[in-house]
Image 1 (cartoon, helix red, strand yellow):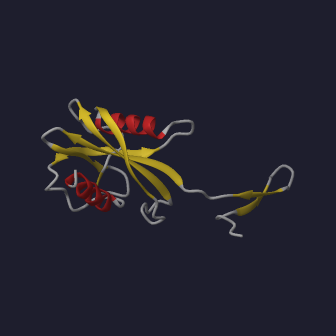
Image 2 (cartoon, rainbow, N blue to C red):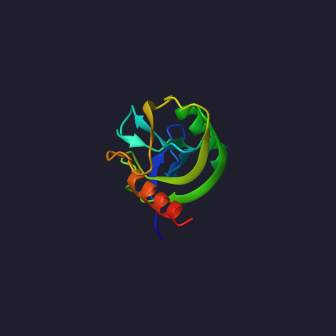
Length: 152
């Protein structure tokens, strides 16, 4: 039976051995389309650098949908409508900081986007002219999104 990444430590007070488990962290990413303009991407001000789909970590006690709405607002300053779950991504190497599982959503943006929170810059990119220096596995995500979108 696999230990699931378990390690052991001793309690500093009683000396009892406690097993610790490493589990992937859950994140959300939101592909936000601005009607007739393209999609919103942020340039990250923290490593790993590059252009990214807005998103972040899900807080304890928060639903995936609430996290997506919150992250969209924090990083872009806009509200999203028509939020839909697209796909989950779980490659352990997708984030150089550690193992994350991301649930990707799609939505329409409502408002005037501006960079906030972890965003150094924000731009709306036409779907046929996305930047090359995408962070994480966002090139794969956007490629699969464009393929699915074109099949509609």
